[in-house]
Image (cartoon, rainbow, N blue to C red):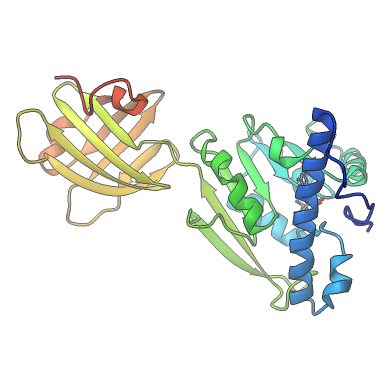
Length: 312
Ligand SMILES: C[S@@+](CC[C@H](N)C(=O)[O-])C[C@H]1O[C@@H](n2cnc3c(N)ncnc32)[C@H](O)[C@@H]1O
């Protein structure tokens, strides 16, 4: 396989001239960084001398059994649109279409891999449902994605993280081997992969994240105020009522897409659901039970448009 980084000219002594050239250089830098980091990993994992590894390719395929595990972990189905960031030879998107009936998009910076992916999609009979685009993954529009797949690098994943967190609640993200820093996966599994091309351990880790609804802030319903603190999928909420000194109830738990629920245990239980812009308290226990069914609107506080909390 020809390396994306062997063509020379990755670093120009002169500054790029137009926006198109700047974009090309930015892409080249991303690929160069990705390829250098992979080369370092290859050198470590495969025992290659670093000088040799640096000439190796950043394109490394996800083994077929890992591809299947990624798509199964995400629960991919016919209604899904799978976007593979750095799609290599297109195998993840093609498998999603062929085995699970999904549609998909693969974005890849190496032109010959894009050509190969399109040919493979034709051969697999899924060309009508998938698209392969020669594009820098950092500029890919992810709005249509219901599932995002990645086999990149930790630093690249972290660079992508703000965009991933901003996706529609419920969007699934699956990564092969590399995590998303302190955003803990919702589920993960480790597979024995004897045929794996890199690494001493011959294991692959597959991780799934479900984009949580953004609930952080203050929510209002009549005389009730719900303050939500959120860190990724974890939340802690305090329900207060105007005129009462102590909170009605405090509870914490987990956000799963547009739904949030307490973890169980002896403290107050609650189930919440974001429907459009409204946060519904579907059920609640203890002192909050009387408020089950209430709908909360986000306080203007979040937009910085008014005093903290709910209007009196
Ligand atoms: C490790 S391979 C993974 C290929 C495929 N997703 C798979 O799992 O089999 C990473 C791919 O990302 C591509 N890539 C690297 N930087 C990229 C960028 N900035 N934009 C798009 N693709 C990129 C590489 O060319 C390479 O094919």
